[in-house]
Amino acid sequence: MQKSEPEETAQLSNHAFSLIAEQAKNGDNEALLKVLEEMQPEIDYLAGFLKLPKEEGIQEITTQFIEKIRG
Image 1 (tube, rainbow, N blue to C red):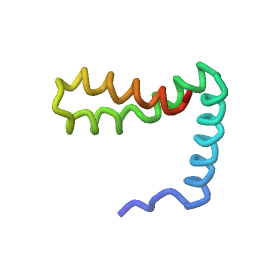
Image 2 (tube, one colour):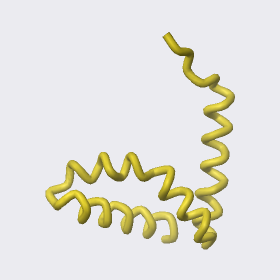
Image 3 (cartoon, rainbow, N blue to C red):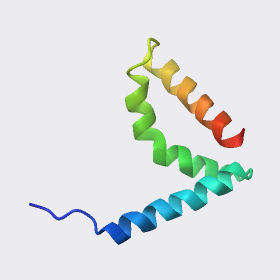
Image 4 (spheres, rainbow, N blue to C red):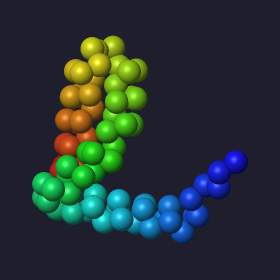
């Protein structure tokens, strides 16, 4: 049985993600790409629930996500 990551490491990861997300909100395109890259597995998963072809669902979710961040 493997041990999960220590809670401190997870918090550091969450903190780093928060910083990158904040940079993305402030117009940093590289930060936005990092956020999208980090979220890609979740976007792919959620696209399966939409009544659209998967690629269109991915595009729609990604577009909405960018609008929410940059909004």
